Image (tube, rainbow, N blue to C red; front, side):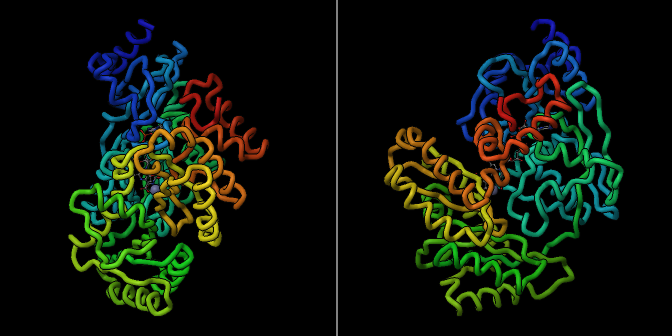
Length: 469
Ligand code: FAD
Ligand code: MLT
Ligand code: ZN
């Protein structure tokens, strides 16, 4: 192993090979604090050529590689296992926005560029990069691509998969695939770009990307709406789609339990409505400078909703500050769940038509398993995606941990019975790989393994992640 460390130092420079436990600490635990491991070393290459040299050195020593971006992933895919034999390859030094072409509508970036910096580069060029996540100040484009991240604008712009045109990838054998093309049309064989999207570091290291830009949408109309139940939220989605058409950008749901935690733990958070409601949706319409009338459209949507009983009350943002206050009620939920205590995360998608019945049935079933368990339900209801997260009964974190497997199995069985998915947008990581395989057909599992073995025959890229050992 000394040989490997020497080769890594030769590849990236002494200062960028970390082995001191204090230096390594932040790279071996993720944002949740739940997923932890040990690393042989953390390597921080500064260029694609350096990434390739690192991959070749690790291959020679048969050392597994764990690619890491902003380390905000929620399924334990970006931290090493407990063996101490894996090398964390951090893209943290590769932060260059290589080119912006507003006319072609493309931005070309290093994989380590933080999402908020891509958004800012697009804005500086008078364009929009629409991906938006609560973690956008830390997560990287490489991580977004590797997890096929979703977020709060998927309804209008799609997942990361739909926002990428080309990639540069260091393959497990150390060769570089240069697919950094911004072409909108290219039917010259298998879609290799899409193969790497959502591959969670198991097929290679993404080092660069060409992403799609859109017209800027500086106009917004935003409301926090009280709705009686999930069925009403889904019916309101249809009204918003009908009246707002392509302007409908965000349609997020949160239950009262989620809002209560935000009000309890997020400094400055205020309930914008007078009366409590069991459920809420955050609705946002967005438009270009030339498009007027967003406020009227939103008021028409909400007027119809109140008249027909789909909504009981709503707060409309009248200023930038009010808009950001409403958004913080939604974006703050992940953080405050952590502050409250032990959390069990489930990131599920269901057919939209089944969301209400599924949610109504799930609550009582979980109470039978762990009386007092608190579903903190929120997420991207416009995409059929619920974060069906659980907090422990008050003061009983250990009981949640003890019942975790039973609770998750009950939820995943119910998702499978409804033809849903047990991972909508976070990926599988180490925590969900086995569960996902157990719900897939043998044919699907075989195909996944065929892809993995074809690209990474020695199994050195993020072993144990996405496809279970
Ligand atoms: P990491 O956590 O570092 O890595 C994630 C995975 O990608 C790992 O398997 C890793 O090996 C692999 N990887 C990272 N970089 C590369 C690379 N260059 N090449 C190959 N593989 C790589 N996710 C959503 O989809 N929607 C949300 O709305 C959302 N909201 C969030 C809110 C909060 C507060 C937090 C903490 C997380 C949220 N996430 C959300 C999850 C997370 O931010 C995303 O999964 C994000 O895409 C991870 O990016 P990252 O750079 O932090 O990746
Ligand atoms: C979000 O949408 O806020 C995150 O994806 C959910 C989570 O932290 O579980
Ligand atoms: Zn989410």
